[in-house]
Image 1: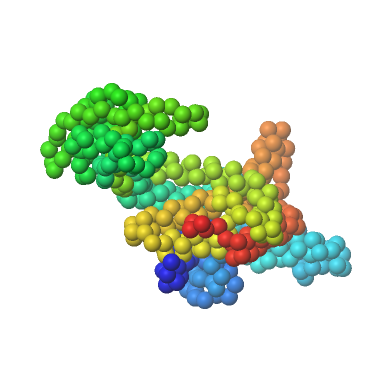
Image 2: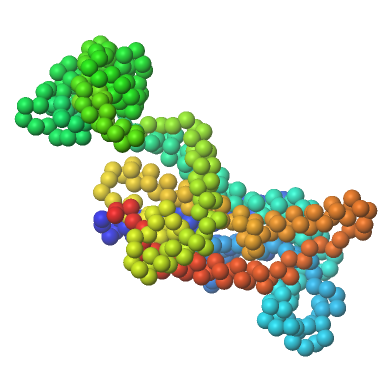
Length: 435
């Protein structure tokens, strides 16, 4: 593993993460502007601003820490109550300390939100939108990550292909070993494929009338036909030939672990990239989303297990959660591994696609400050309005999500702690593709 290739792999992952974040925020930005919401900022990263430019009413830029991004929409919450709107941040309605730390947080959130409003009757604000428009804006980010993952998986499966053991012969066994997995020994009989005249480079088109395209297809026919003559149609140098061969009988472990007699031909397959149907990318994205969801709902337990392995030095679960640091390390290993460049490109695309699936699923968690939390707030607002219409009551006030800022803070701290544990584990006890 070369250091330069490892660093290049990490750099590519940083760029890939930045693109993924940019697309996520674009998924929020485009519908927000389409629905008339005033957007003050579109930023990739957190911390100090490295570069920015203003186009119209929106400032676009990059910040120093590429671990996220955001857009700043006007009026995420309704304006502060009139009797407390003019008070300084942190003071209550009676002019004294407003009830402690969490009450101060709520008031500060309201004050910051009020700064984005152009008067109490401002129409170009998020909270005034209909429920479905707010849901579209908040789901736009995760959906962009999901669509990006589909594109990456489609390139991986349909443009590059999946490494598959094909029906093309790469090499021949010299003999029939005592078992299907044993090495040749003096006195072992010649392998049926070599005796029948098969050659490296031959592509087996059919076996006993059954078409074959992969080694698995061929093996199924051969293993089911010990000591029975088979007719193989072989393509050799552009022409097809028919070869008769009788598989030898060897013992191998069956699916239940017991020994059974199977047919043995003595060919080794060529491994090639086989392109998959165009829908394979979307199918892989859906399957990966389901697998990640199975991990996400167990995230606290998984992170606890990771912390235990960190303290005890035990091997980590390779299917457990990773931080972006862990993803970067894997990207570095993929770039530096001793393999053809196409293999490394395929590995990187798969890793980046999986990262976007993780971003998609994670942001759907129905807790603020995640996108799923904002969706829940919008749906609750819609439910209240529907209830009022059904019972002919006056329209309720918009749901004030600023009251949930303390919950948001607790969730943020929990996510920060779990993220910190994963980062430390990825530095000290990383998951590796080389182990």
